[in-house]
Image (cartoon, rainbow, N blue to C red):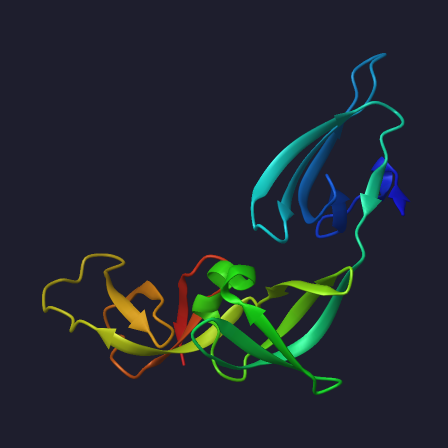
Length: 187
């Protein structure tokens, strides 16, 4: 389905260069008698690349992408694959490490995610904004090392390494932002 310039919205699924993308931001400008110019910043869902593209003219057609979201739960993983269960049909879906890319560092047991399908094929997952994870290894805080915002490295149960405040100990459960990989709080 073709979209006009005024129908664009942030977060919309688009098909750009025959690839499914999510629109991150856009701006429209028009100078005097010239044709309008649309500058779009978008993320390719399959590769995860963030790109910028400029369209110029009156009859540019932007296609919307038919991306289906299916609620699923992460079950387990083996060496090469990650296994999810469709929450409505209870069907098991297998995704490879290549498809998941950097998302694997946030996958904890029983995590509820959205599987993204494009042309009836799973292409990616959408994580919640934050995930609760267990601290596996962290150094002890050193007395006197308490300047403003003092942090230390912590390794979480999935192998993810983040900076945490000095009061965090081994076996603590922490909340981590999946978009920035930053510590949000202790539970």
